[in-house]
Image (cartoon, rainbow, N blue to C red; front, top):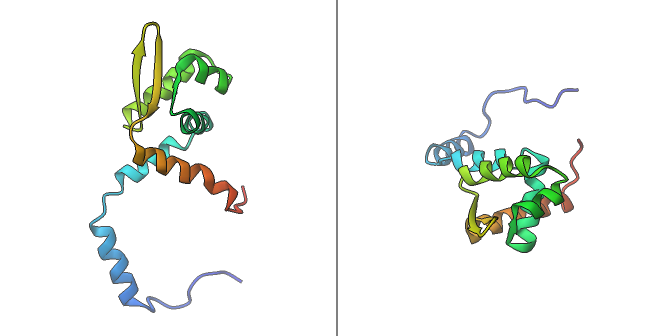
Length: 120
């Protein structure tokens, strides 16, 4: 048995409400954040930056078990997307999340696996 409706629209008022809400929404920021979570290394970076707020590239590379070049690539991607920022201190470069709103969102997303039962 397939799980599809056998009719057309049953609740046009609900459809209209959602369509109107979507018409006024800019989903591009949400799509960017989704892309940031699409790579396991970037998810690990999020865990690290959520835990310690700021970490240097070499420490993040060790966490990822990756080269500094590969880690820097992921961090530059996150910075380009506006999710992370960097600062240089001597020879070290430190990364953190751009603001508290991003940090709060990351915390919510990272905690989701504990409350979901998704099949992969």
